[in-house]
Length: 355
Picture 1: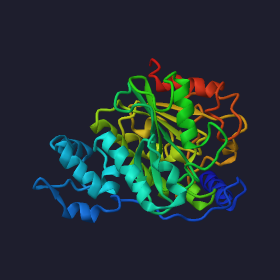
Picture 2: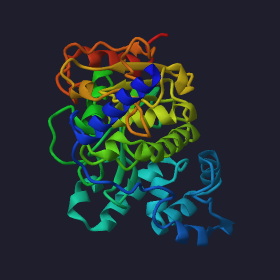
Picture 3: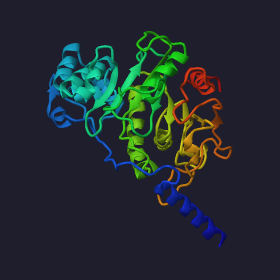
Picture 4: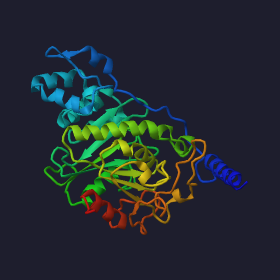
């Protein structure tokens, strides 16, 4: 009877989570964008210097890196001009080539909502216009950085809204800029050493706080893409990254954890990581967690029932993550505000704080 009672309580909490008593009431169901980038069919049909091109769907990033290493500049630029959407999103391709390819791909859409992304000083590591659009941007010199951080955001982030006006230090780009400045690495496009930060919207995020945000479907698709993205960083010689995972993005990180080479996973404003404990994530990375006192995520029940809800609270003692101080954080998105305890701790982690 006790077990049955606990099941009923869990079910009731899950229903509350779906029904909105915790604030998860609105939002449209999203179709996850998965698979290789647009233009893959034409890429597969092409050759360069008599060589078949690596299949974006099956070639490992290290294979892609080796392929491009065997091409001269003329052949690389031929592929860039013919297949910008593939080259720009191909994990393992040279970074400068991807930046240029994505500028071309953005401009080719002719859509005003993407126009700012085509500016010559932007370093886009990914751009996919399908659906609501996906984008990843580099802040700093990723080719020569000693430390790399990746911001994995939650709901309501996509390529169309990426450059929309936001409160400073919020949103993926604002968080990446704030983190890089806090590490003392200078301007967003500075060169040489130091840290680089990537704002990664490489998956289809939930819209609003409806069933998509309470379900793991989009997170599972995102986890596959995040794991491949980190493999792509490794293939081009970038340092193993620190993953900063906000809100629903922490669900993505939790599911991807065992498949990445991240040195650290930092979950903040998290509804859960789909694991009962940090050890259950199956990663050798250090696991950190932060939650501010006024973050509404605390009102979300930490349950998982019939696939709904994301499980244990990463900031609980039982979960076993290292706690990040966040007593002065305001709201759900204030973790990167300059002067906060959380940003100071994040910067130390990003620079490889001693174990």
